[in-house]
Length: 100
Image (tube, one colour):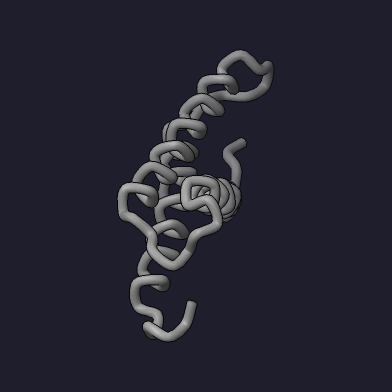
């Protein structure tokens, strides 16, 4: 029996949400607490690190009984990390100059 479509989307939403948090934590670590100026390279690196972790997580699942690796999960992981990191970057670039 095939799972309902809403379960597919719920799973991808969970993946994206969790990796959004991971991407933000990578970005925060790369910035070392300095949010006044955010280099785009730090944003790209944070997304790349979260994506790489997603790949290793999916690979690991190939060794766990009852679990299977899924490219779509990795895409959701990367999309979640990219969304939050680039939104944070854009929000910091668009803030008024007098707000730190």
